Length: 227
Image 1 (cartoon, rainbow, N blue to C red):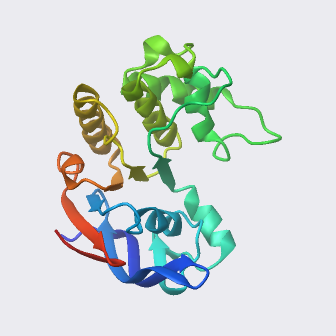
Image 2: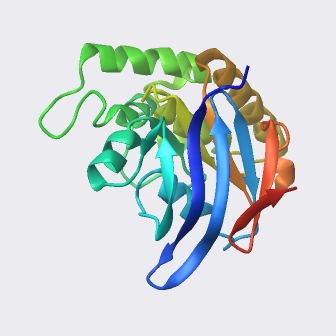
Image 3: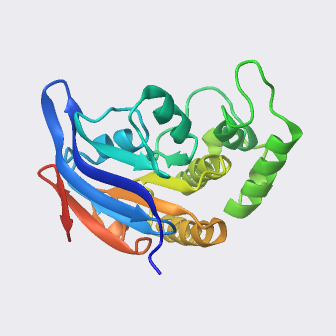
């Protein structure tokens, strides 16, 4: 039986100003699938993620998430709650933040916000996710003191704590040493199966997607093609 489509993109044209980055792009991602998208820097991978996240409106065509077409700012904002996002590995800020609080920020707008403090269930979910990603023993440690692999685990934990059915991962293992890459690949495989997630991952190197993806597409000249 064919699984239902979770993300559908039809005849998508997207870009900035008059510059078109994505051209007549079509792709369907089904529930529980792990899709890898490879492409050189500047190919449009980040632009595609911005469209799926509802941060960039299409110039032409349409995008739907969970059956909802992202055709208004309100719908784009609402459907963003259905997506967890793991950005590229980056250096933490200068302010001290504990691992617990760094992961807790994934609950922002989901369980708490400007006028609402985190609830006990928000913090309990963080504790559960920290155990899942193997960082319970560093819950109170300053996130700036973590290794690159551990910081990437925090980013994954921040996405998981949202309890979103879709994860977008930007270069999830590319900038790590070999040992940390293997850990992150295994973690992504594990949480995908446990939480029945749909994954979309991008990387400039197809080899970094192979251990995590059911299929890999190549983004080239604004279009997706079979690798």
